[in-house]
Amino acid sequence: MSSVELDRAFHAYAPPGHTPAAHLLAVRLDAAHSDLRKAHVAEPSLVREIAHRWGFTEHSLTRHHVRAYGIAPLELLGE
Image 1: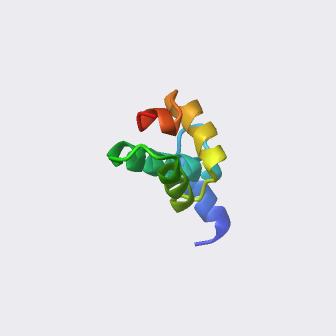
Image 2: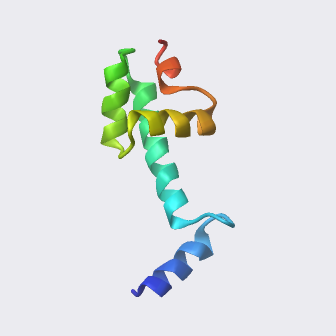
């Protein structure tokens, strides 16, 4: 499959205006959010570990998480 065909296929099924990069960010953010919700320890080092696991810096995870979920990762963990 060529990149043009892949692009067409993505846009045929993606929400209007959604780019592949935005979709990938949303998938990574959702996975990080899921890991945060499953966490049993409220430690800043855990936020850093989860951020790195999903390809974020701690700062970028916090920024995207607040934008998407309205709460910072540390607040979600109870800190």
